[in-house]
Length: 247
Image (cartoon, rainbow, N blue to C red; front, top):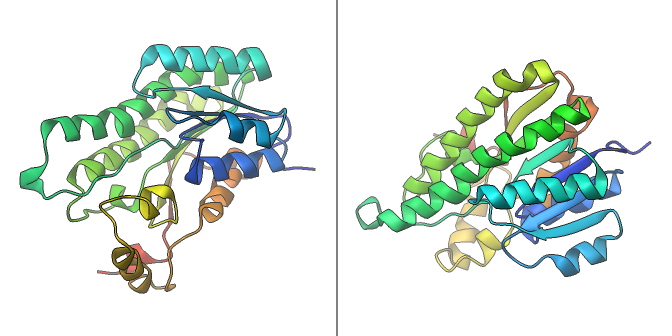
């Protein structure tokens, strides 16, 4: 039997990169999946079949969240799995960071997660079970030079995850955070602030000598979304090739 058969998953930032990888694996393992993104993911959803839908979605807008949750329930039923995957990262020295840039990081990386948890939880209550999976970062475990705004928001995601575990545990809703290291996604490979030499240096500096593949994170998403992790909540799961071990 597939590992998430009968479950309904909502994945933000699902049109490409890690979010799309999560969708592909959850579908393979029996879930019905809604991918949302500010980018167009209609062709990807069509490719993935009848058990996948795409909705355009600005995670910083409450009304967008309310619409997406309602449309998901209408199509597939109450939500069992929420993957708060949408996020941005921008390198900049502290003294050149603008208020607008910091606010953009806050709205997408932090406010988007807050809204997602708050608005999706009632749907999980209808389902009588739920797994909230928040994609943080190893930058949510320690500081990174040039990533002040990103690091601040990823620490916040880690904290909100724990509060959600406490607030919703009595409803059989679990909440955990995933903390990836450097993963081969468009955010890393197509980021104008990250050149190939920097990516190569990241790989060489990693104990395993490479950066991660999105499906390696997706395997962890699948585990946390399944009943195999039924007694795990309020925890951080680091997946970084050992990078965080280095001082």
